[in-house]
Image 1 (spheres, protein in one colour):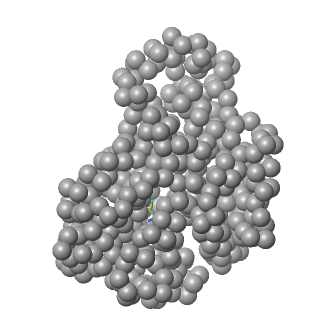
Image 2 (tube, helix red, strand yellow; image 1 turned 60 degrees about the horizontal axis):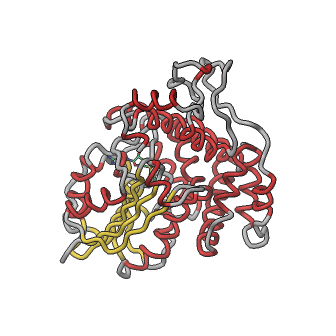
Image 3 (tube, protein in one colour; image 1 turned 120 degrees about the vertical axis):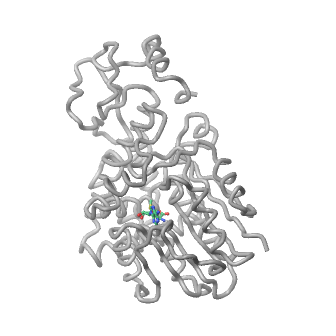
Length: 392
Ligand SMILES: C[S@@+](CC[C@H](N)C(=O)[O-])C[C@H]1O[C@@H](n2cnc3c(N)ncnc32)[C@H](O)[C@@H]1O
């Protein structure tokens, strides 16, 4: 596989292949430029921008901008036009504003939205309504969130993705680095959380995982369940929990003040921010909560930790016997604050089993525009979602 090879061998293979163009057409790879310089990178650019081209002779690689072509794909455009505005009014309005903010992203949106089940589409409309209400309530416009989504994709994810392609690992490995560069910066966290919130609407894998949470996980919990989410971030899952008529007391811990602010903002929109206990808390410093919860959620959290097994071993103790955990952990998913890399979905369930969980459900959600097989072969993002149960 591409990334398993030694870097030198990769560049040699590029040189040997006429189908790979190198920076300036020379033997020097453009590793430091934010520019696709091989087919694998090109496909990632296309996933984000719809269109892009390989590096070519004469490109200025000191200019740290992404080059994409401006035209949109007419065939795919017609798929977006197929969205039934009457059935999905919030989604239609969001898509329109997003395309205005980032025209090159339109084909990607068409691929993602043109390929969803009715159930996922219904949840996508509900997520769109939530995003719209948050945006209007807190910013007075949808456009701010759409611009933050573009920033998140282009300046946070793509940059991390290129590092991953070139080095075969995530850029950061220490929690202190993630705190320094991301969690402690309110302006970065605001764009990050807004972007991630919108990814729940626009990304196939994130939308699928949200539907799994609502339609499969929540119904498994007992009436009046006591619930903890670690790392709620933008708060979309806590929102779904708080609006579930069967939920009991709800607690959220997040290490970032910016994330707590984003979660509170989401809960304010439905008027339940006082009913959910939100605590700024590093989960590794938390007071022991032995046998306390019926439900614990760690969604897009374990890859942010240096030692996810240690986290799962604490969390299983915090559950009551028979209690359940929902884990959503992406494989091959570079981001500025991702520290722990898994490249096979089984690595996540192995961690859960090693912590003592019985696996009750397990589903995989490949990234927009790709099937599972291709994601596994080329180390592309797959959201791995599982429900574990504490025996007893
Ligand atoms: C990517 S967000 C996840 C948001 C949301 N749960 C989701 O599924 O999209 C990860 C969150 O985990 C928080 N986090 C990271 N390490 C943490 C820790 N040790 N304890 C508590 N929260 C942590 C971050 O501040 C961030 O808000």
